[in-house]
Image (cartoon, rainbow, N blue to C red; front, side, top):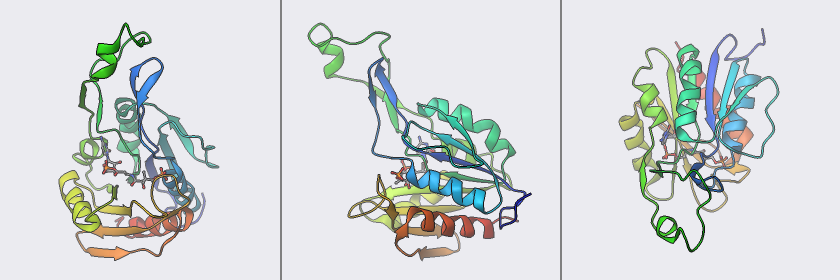
Length: 219
Ligand code: PMT
């Protein structure tokens, strides 16, 4: 066994965007690169944990020692998380999950012209909320959510902490030099105990600090 604050612990991490099909060649997605979630996976592994990383489509290599499960849609991500969540002590929900998906993805490529009606109005329906669904049965597990916000960062993140049933929320400031796609991040941690801003830095340094804060919450 490896040494560290998470030695002997099992950790689940979600990372990256989801991609929700419109037809076999088109999809709805977002700007998440997976960098923050993969940095968390490396940090948790370096802290001694057994790590499962459930990843949406990203262009990143699997971190050393980490079990990676690749998925595309939010529904696939939820299914892939169920067993590792059951077996974990600590979970980080860092994925940027599409809130909505096309209601009726086409089984064949929609053609400009012939299928204009279908291409011009894509009806969307709700995706499952992976964090809220799993946190509802969390028992003694520690659950960490993320929130990426452009405005009223702390207030919006505190609302997510309560609504989703997380123990800790890592709120990132979206905008100049942070969050989606970049190598650095500015994060505020919120829990029932209070709020603390982490130093601005590389996603690896920020991930290590988030892992330490979450490890402190384990019984
Ligand atoms: O991937 P990078 O380019 O490195 O960028 C990292 C990041 C900015 C994407 C990441 O740090 C981050 O903040 N992820 C969450 C993005 C977000 O705003 O999520 P949200 O507000 O939609 O959701 C809040 C929380 O609920 C998140 O923990 C999310 O994983 C979870 N969620 C949301 C919707 C949903 N259907 N299922 C979920 O589990």
